[in-house]
Length: 264
Ligand SMILES: [Zn+2]
Image (cartoon, rainbow, N blue to C red; front, side, top):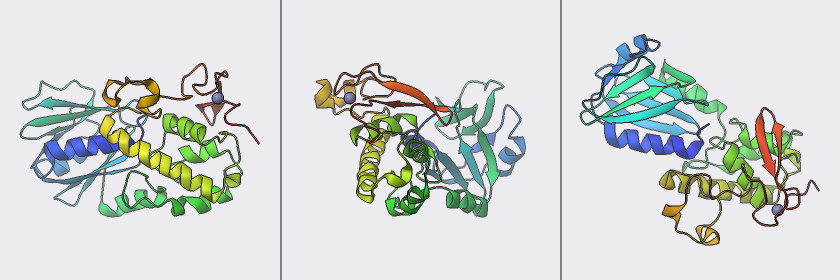
């Protein structure tokens, strides 16, 4: 599943290619035909990213809410674009770029009140300037469940997925199974700063890099996807050489080096 950095990157790209324009909106697949018809030809005022959600805000006052889920993807073509396949849920045609959406979990038309209701359910987003770690702190303090689950819970902190979860807990020496409420305030603020730094850098890089490029002996631009990770999908710990343990945590794989991340 795309993590927050991918969503923010998409928002920047779509704002650059379609923002401020009158956009032709269609649903070649048909499942979003009514919503598309309502904003077809309207001006795209802005694209707002929050966590793993995208909000396309139109001059009509309508908002298209997109959540990619596990398999959703955007494709960009130069305009005029080739004829869409019948899997394209949403096609946005601007003067120079055409954006297609396929496979998304959510593609719905909402109003600003609906948008506000979704935002109210989400925790702070570390990429956003308004992201405040203190909003997440009371929720962490109440939870006896594993911190590894809390970090992926979008109502606690928005935008963190499996890869950033694994790496951030590793670098701070925290086992994913430790109860969220045993994490200290200082540890949480350190985790937040790490997540904020990595996620913001991820918006620029387009790939997730959690191991310092100097440690890999190559420049940031030459690092391939999946190469700069400490524990996620790794066999051995990059720091101590111990075997990485992998287990099912709430339906998603968790990874840890149990030497570097003791259970206490
Ligand atoms: Zn280790």
